[in-house]
Image (cartoon, rainbow, N blue to C red; front, side, top):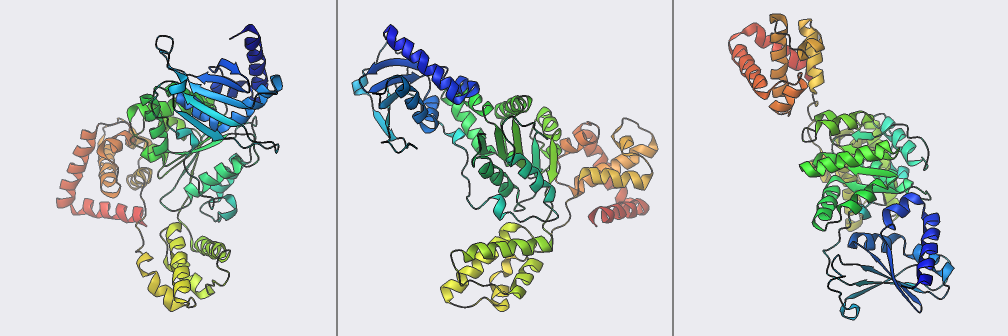
Length: 476
């Protein structure tokens, strides 16, 4: 490479740095090298396939524009992955496989061809930072707001409407709810809104996709680029956090979470339970998650269910103008399908299919027949360990802190054992988790308490009645 080419390359890098900003430049272009300039093409290289793929997908036109400012005759950028051993064993470029991709321009001129020449064997690239698939229907416009989701919706809108550089009001935003209550809808709505006409980079990943990306980065030795990419995101949205597994993956998630929050970047997370109940996660991660705004989306009330049904019918009419569901049918569905929003959507889809395929109007009789399997018995109330501790403490006239303390006086030991017994019989929490929630006790202590109360209840009528009374209070 001549001195003139080196000077041009320095000026191009300066233009690129100004164009994309210091953070983006450092993350993606700091390790890009100029290999050669031939007529209308410039040959650049990067150290990893991951960097090559990302630059191709997001900055190809930007790089070409910066070169054309120096050399108007340049019409093509050849981007290669340089081998770590190329100095010892150079590979002939003519024998290498060539990939070509057309880059769309916004100025109306012919699109340049960005050619990628693989000059050395590399591992398959991972595409984790392409984000998980988004459903175009899941936007704020289609989200139905009710009493059970008002706070979660308001918090999500606040995040989506923020701009780069704005102070972060709460971080992370942690939304938890059961299946089909709208948490994924809200997270995808944040992503759609954040990526529409905003200068911020918003990335939506499921926990599974995060794990896949991290493991793939380790295998392809691109873990550093993966980490840099994640930490360059303005808003990171993680769905279904309860599925995050693996010690190294959780450690990386913790580091990423800390780095983003400390840098003032926004993190939005959804799971099916509160942070304190994510037993598989490290204590540090749970603590950091609980330090933000934790919002629960409750079960759907009848009024909200009716609103969701009407919204789904309106959406169906966009493509099927003659589709009509009588008010009495909507009232029936809202009253009887109580489990989650997906069942409501499934009911509308069934009615639509039956009406169109059989060319029959929707009636109450048809609805009763078509959705009978969606009418489920009312689920029992989900009982929390904190509720058990509160009710037991009130029953035995002790404080909740007494139950969690190391005190071993008789007036505290028995209520503590009863509370542990109820936690084991009324929740799905494991013995180690119950012990942790009772002042960090060992699981053997919980097991002893459970067996002790089981034995006493079998022969002590008064205690048996007390325990049954506590169960009723908790289940009402």
